Length: 197
Image 1 (cartoon, rainbow, N blue to C red):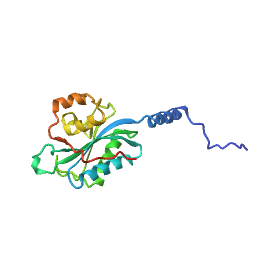
Image 2: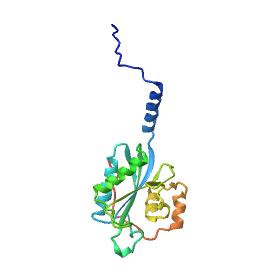
Image 3: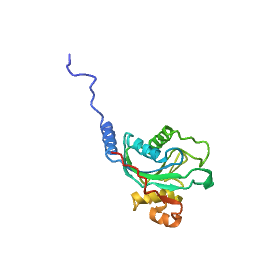
Image 4: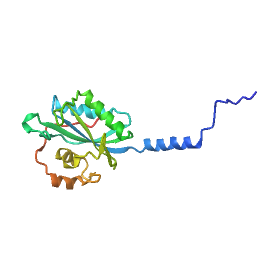
């Protein structure tokens, strides 16, 4: 009778290659830019909560947090809603874009985001602006964000944390900003978001 365990099989080389490839991916996180906005409730607390929730996400680390800006609502009469607090965070993540999107939606829901109307007021907006240099026209997640290049409330705080930033397919943020202008994007130097410990 053989003493070798018949359940122990050699691992096929193809499986070893897949595991090694996955391990390389894990040690090689992707850069993503996430835009945050809030115009209901305690806006600063909500933005900080979103940053902390991103940091608590397995496979994601928040690397930089922009200053806070106060802006008028987009796409509606400015007097119809409270003003927004906006910020941009830079993250490194091993999550694929679809999983990052799911996590963003889960964080929005945790802060009781309601999607009743387009450009309606919201407790929290979490948008993926870019993911590495990925270009995608998938309607579920268009990358880069289809309107980021024309929104000063995204470009201004993004430039603060990454002056060399480029919107894939659109050009350097600094050049886009010169075309869009910074009217209505007001720095709130009295407010500060913390990078998670």
